[in-house]
Image 1 (tube, rainbow, N blue to C red):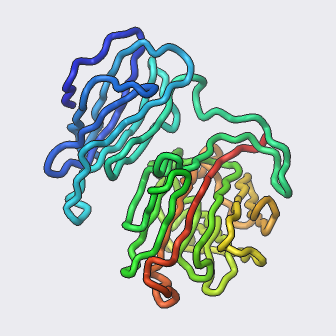
Image 2 (image 1 turned 45 degrees about the horizontal axis):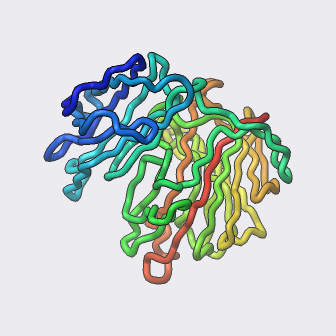
Image 3 (image 1 turned 180 degrees about the horizontal axis):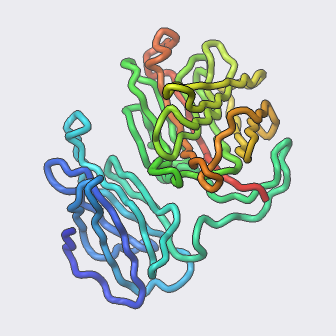
Length: 340
């Protein structure tokens, strides 16, 4: 790794591991802690899948929680996957203690906002009272898309719009290109396990397939345990689907319709994933529940799941109408909580 300025001095040590997709030059980036840039411009050297670079920075940051901003400066794309420059943050540690969840995939110029220090792992908030049919939970994280895709850092396709702070919009294209954003699925222990997942969103058309909010296998292997929070049928209604791997590497699934929901309005779609049971909710009202084909999370011998939102219309091209850009879903907030 090229360090364009010497490392800082200080009693605290911040270590960032990373890799890149290099194309016509290496990925360049800057690092800031609590809003103040540390060092100059850094340059990755190691290709993803072939190892990692280690950047060690020193400073006097002290205890408590700190904000880490890593800004990718020189994205480049030549029109196909082999001609694409990307930057991957593989991990962060502070004074020898790993920062849980401090990973990011930067596929375009922008900033990955991470954190380190304080108590290990994501901090659970105070217990909330039961809301409708929802159980009392402790919030682990909330993504409100105030600064781009946030922790949904794996982004693909031409139909992702983050131009308005506080929301992310996924839209169709006339040539039915896939688009989406997700928490990176990098292994069985990536993503998150049992708990309550909630997506607050609306759909502009609401009566044709394409938009989705789901939980994807943490291993990124499919078919596998995929939990679709909300999709829509031609003409309605909205529905949830539980997928699992069947014989011969086949995809098996069961869907659950959620009648009486107007997807054009803003709703919060939630799924409670417990050992041996899945339950779907809309605005706190229980819509369905099942004990069949419920996957196990990593802590119980299975794999964790990665939240994802997107637009996929190629399989329902005959159902699309309008300009080709009119099938849209706007997501305002995604959260993950554990049972209190």
